Image (cartoon, rainbow, N blue to C red; front, top):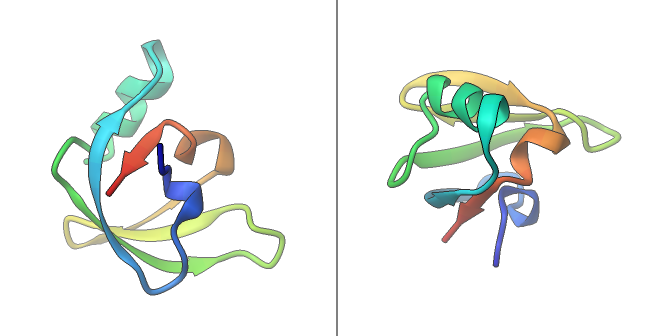
Amino acid sequence: MKTLRDAKIGDTVMVVKLHGEGALKRRVMDMGITKGTELYIRKVAPLGDPIELTVRGYELSLRKDDIDIIEIA
């Protein structure tokens, strides 16, 4: 299983599935990250946390804990 943590700066990836349950999964979905959404990896902070993405035309920063539930292709 390849997660968003495995993506590199400049990659455009497709969300295959969201793992997890409850509030975290709901919050990620509310930010526009759903199955079939394209994500462009813009930047990664010097220590690797957070990661900045372009999702549906807007910029979004996510913590490492949040990106582990996002399976990509």
